[in-house]
Image (cartoon, rainbow, N blue to C red; front, side, top):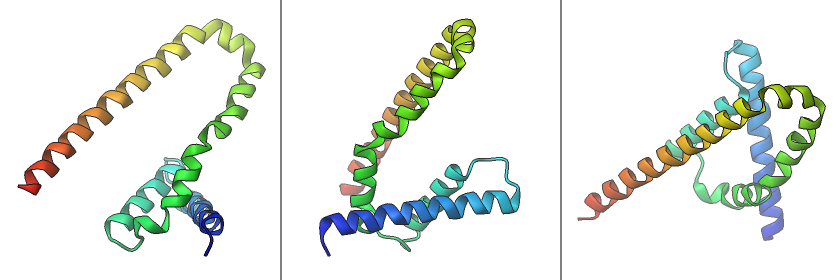
Length: 123
């Protein structure tokens, strides 16, 4: 199977998973978004080895590479909320800035701990 077809099939798998997780959230009236449930489902399937990383690797790499395209509508949509940005723009900026720093910090700490743990396992 060609690389392009594999990528398309893997992206389709992500779309099906997203639709399924949205349906689960609606059906169970869960107070979280479908994307969070989808991440939990995908992580569980990977950990239980129901899905192998090779089965989703090309699709996930393509989606990550094209991620900027998913944020353009949100950035353009801000123009509809000019008064909100004028009145609360600094608070919006601060919350984005602080949450970005927190994500970077915790990702670094978790990565460091995993690297140390893998180093200990290799001995």
